[in-house]
Length: 633
Ligand code: UDP
Ligand code: MN
Image (tube, rainbow, N blue to C red; front, side, top):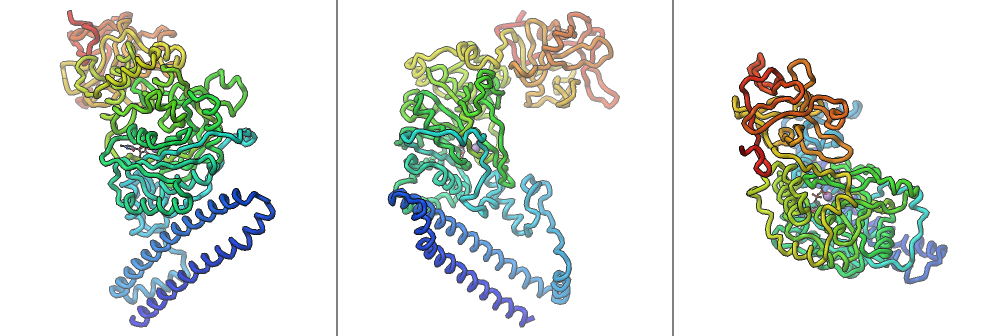
């Protein structure tokens, strides 16, 4: 026993000496190589000395930062080795003979797969096969804090390569040598330090250095310990290599992402600002298309194309080019490319877009002139649609640039809020009240909020209304007709919300299983699967309000026979003359205009209520909200 323990100690000391020796070798080789190899390459490339110095300095400091990272990783590995040794020693004490047998056996057999401690955790679905139990626990903890695999991030190189996802025709594009300068702003709240470092590294490596004026970090009052002294230290290190390149602005209370972006904008000094999330890796040639386009037209707000970094494996998937849009909840989505762009037959051409996702680049002064971001937006969401409406309605444009690509980490969950719904809803109402004129009701309807006395405080909007007047902005009607015709307002909805039958006030009409077309009665809940929208013209939509060109809302339908009602895509149902028109008023029967059957409820064999179509009895329905006094008498 004692001999084994002694041998282990010798092994540890040996390992430490070996690592120290390796580190020494790496440093020594680095210096020698700098002298020999770099001199010959410089000779070959015949670069002017100043330019050469810049390039070399850049490469060397990356090497240095990577070494720093490597050193940290090695420290971690040694620490884990130490823990492992301690555990093994403990085990030896408990089962000395058994352990010796196991060690012998492991020399001949393949190690058996590790046990998964968290088989249900999304983190371990595609990743983590070979981790020890301690490592799995560590990774799980980090995942809970950040919503992505920070354990893996801490072990990946800061300057890792990612696939160049640009179309080959982007590579043939050339740009002026006199492009405007760029401030890059990275905002964050509780990100892993290695994530921020990788973003910075990608920006330094993949932006022409004469154009990159500064990188501004905005900390929206993170509580994460490593973003304090460690981050300050990291910034110092970068600034030793690139004097003045990195700046940091720290909020002393949480202000939300719109104000974080504004703080970055206020600190910026270059011609153009690119405002990014801190969990990105910019791709090759990302900056030139942005700078060139904004130089050409200073009123364009641009978006790069996003690729996806998986939250678990950190693999990068290419996303197809699309334009940015939103639905009536003002939640963002991708829309198809406009025909006018396709007809241009140039895959590198900017694409006119109704909206922007959040990450953006703009002429710094123009963005200020139109009011940067609405500082009245809280936490998250809506600020991108607010900016989009303001830009279009007040004389600017929004475009997606196909040749500028950024890989963006899509988290599994957000570290700053368990449920974003209250913030999204509140911010959406703010946008509706400032920008959407008579169409604002659509936002209330989509969120299932009463049109009057909603009880939701969307803050003071007077300064934003004043800004709208000062900038002499166009109406939302103009925006819908000219910029976003795919969004279809509906004018004749007179009742909406939950549809209940007084026989049992606990159950509500529900669209039922997602892919099915059979409505059900379910316990009332907050989800939009229980929204209904009754039109003066007789249709009754069931499920979330869609109201757009390419997707259909679903209409309550009497199929004519059998007792089960169905839900059918409204436009097709109308064309096929299905029975989708109903007579209804609050507290009255819901009766099909053609078949004269009523929607009623009846108990199934199992004792649950279900909706049925039958000869009308005395059953009636109530609807949660009414519009403009409909059904009052
Ligand atoms: N953010 C912030 N303060 C907040 C909430 C978010 O600074 O209160 C930052 C966050 O760190 C991120 C950016 O805003 O850099 C966008 O948020 P997120 O990435 O979670 O949104 P997504 O990209 O998933 O829509
Ligand atoms: Mn993000």
